[in-house]
Length: 213
Image 1: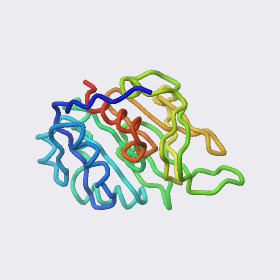
Image 2: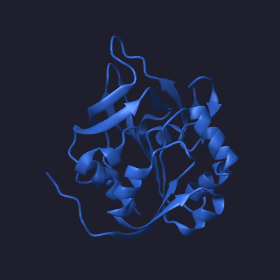
Image 3: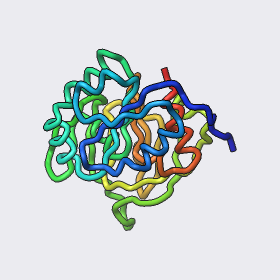
Image 4: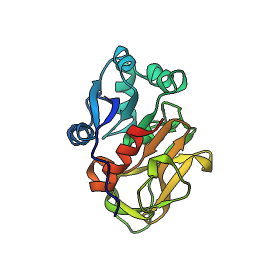
């Protein structure tokens, strides 16, 4: 199995911190990979970073409310569309990239990748989907470099992102039904699983994102 490059990547990574995600494991993982990690709580802090990670645990409406209260919605959009810097959404953070979320009520998302977030509805299988599951690649990407197809990653979620354009889907997973596991649109990436909790290949994926131009 391929090993990750242990040299620190010369880049400045920001983690969006709106108080609803336990970002400790992600922060520790990044500290082993890059030279600089910053918690982003205000728009002005975005100017000092090269790439941004949007993690999330909790509900779609609550996360969007907190992003609006921190005045981060428009600045995050400008970070990727004007500055053209890379963004990675993790778990709920990936779902927030969508146009609309259906959790509890319809809520407008960041609208960075067109699509909707819908409830998982597999027959006769427990929800939430929690645990290790294989990820099947549909397309190649720098994000997946050095990662074997059908490798297992760690999931915890009850909702899924359904992109409008299938070409935005990099990989899928089966859990009673097939759903999107990884998305990419230009410099915007999203993973439904938790790479920071997915052992060495999860670290590889984060490292690939940190090195992507």
